[in-house]
Length: 340
Image 1 (cartoon, rainbow, N blue to C red):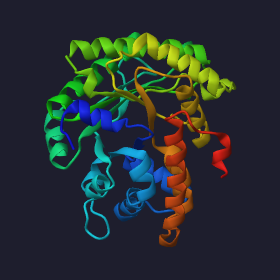
Image 2: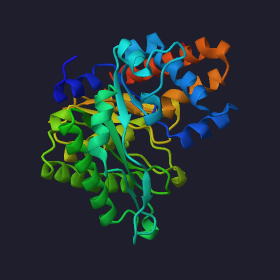
Image 3: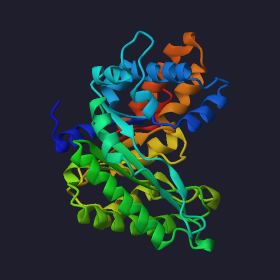
Image 4: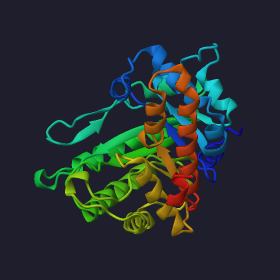
């Protein structure tokens, strides 16, 4: 495996492959486990993630990289193999979530700022030694037009932090996934999402240029352009695709090798259908793939439900979702394949 940033980034968006976001914090994975009546312990979290990483069908064919949480990158499988080695053995690239989460932005009610820059240089050096070759930092941009959220200060602060993080990653030989997530939780329509995402991405690339970040060695992890969940509006995959691509052509430089979408609360099939529609209207200057957490894991989690005898069923469910999204990343998915 080449250690050039550009080569790692290119491998992360290889044809028909995408990124598994398995970097849920301890609090988030507890919520997921509560839903399937499984106690969240270091061992249960390890067992669950191990079953994903040992899903050879999914990992080898459709997963290019795995975003890990600090606990997971240090864990060993039940047989003593480091989980990082399972990922590498499947031909996938280990990555790491490095931000410390979003906190309220002082003076700006409703806005947040992602923390975690202090000590990041030293942490990146350690993660590199542990095997990570890419990292992830998530900025959270909420939309509440009635309250003036997001503010220009929020967009500016978050994109500046993303750029500083990205520069530190590249210094450490690690590819930064730059994730400015405009949330789809609000009551806004698709055009408001377009405008806020445009303002965010425009500012993001100005900040990345200012920090001398090499765009060829980065991956963008954005939201799709979509109406908020509370709006009561359901956009067709074609509309989501048309607006998302129009926006990216206005804001994302062609030097960026790939864009790996977050699912952002879309259902499994919705995330797949929208990604497929986006790729179906190509060609595009960048690879367009997925970096899904819940949209890849909801089905296997439910199938597993904490029972060892359910591992094959959970792996089959994971392989199916990974394959569906792999096809969508090529614009070759069809609804009929979901039931095949």
